[in-house]
Length: 218
Image 1 (cartoon, rainbow, N blue to C red):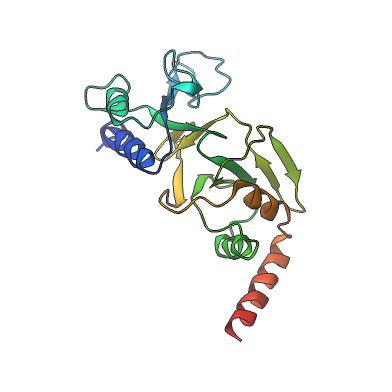
Image 2: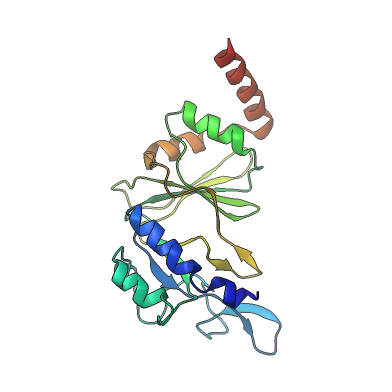
């Protein structure tokens, strides 16, 4: 089965599932080859697209994100206008999105760290091998915030920033995936941000996790 056949139906199922979790979505462009150049571009057709495969389809805007099943079926249904489009939500509306970049994938230890800092174990997106995104309940502040760690970065996405959701495709054959699914309760976004900005270097995190497990077992 080729990619286009595989994708038909999957975006609609994903959008309906997110709607059931109270997360509104809207269709976004997908990767497309730039004719004659062998490069990954955007289905919008602009060669110099600044946000390839991650901006709304047609004349849609961020305020058009919806949980209405009829609208989602109109967009992604079998006869829909954009049945293979990417699925996107909007940061700061129904979810706060905190990004962890360039930190080694010690997922079990990071989950323990978040739980110990009352940041819960909520939905987590895998974007690429260097980037994960944690979803939390939104806060009033709409500003972006970046914090440099000893290893890697933590960034809170600005209110209104478009966020691709699974099974959205990325330029270069990548795909957004769930590391922890959408049905988990949303932790407090502020607590996720504070916990991640205190994340120690990887070797210290592993040592902390061992000590934490030992103390819990004792």
